[in-house]
Image (cartoon, rainbow, N blue to C red; front, side, top):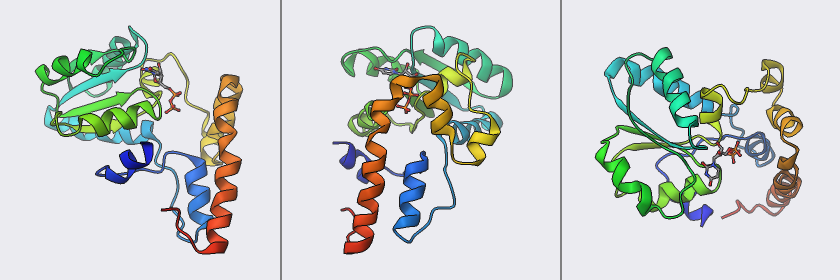
Length: 193
Ligand code: UDP
């Protein structure tokens, strides 16, 4: 399950305005979001110094190639070890290719929860640092624009993304219920475990 994947992960980052809001409601406020895209960029800056091997998994066919070109241009030290689009059926279709590329770091851009479940299933087998980055390969490739700074600074990136992609509305309807549940946990003293 998604919960098991999150509970077992080596690190979990608050990539969403809802988690940050819930942390405040529950009395242990997080400093802010750590968006997958921003963490990916920080990591690339580090990798660039060490000539590390990066594998890009996810997004539509062709997007990974474009993202790789942009990344190689901006972070000259990064070695692109391999690219695989995210529209496969079984993990076994892609695992050999990833292993053969011997990546130090694997960006997993399959969207949520598919990417979390993929990482959970394959963490033992793939000896790489894995980072789930949602739609970030589309952004690296230049196909999708990140929200303007104003939206990001005011915790409104979700609103911008909703306006660009109204189909996100239904998945977002879970958020008000999540926030209400945070209030309920606050009142009852439960932590949600
Ligand atoms: N995607 C994929 N395989 C799938 C479904 C989605 O590679 O089976 C990709 C999709 O092309 C996009 C990303 O996963 O690049 C999901 O983007 P989204 O912004 O929806 O990410 P989320 O907000 O779910 O993390």
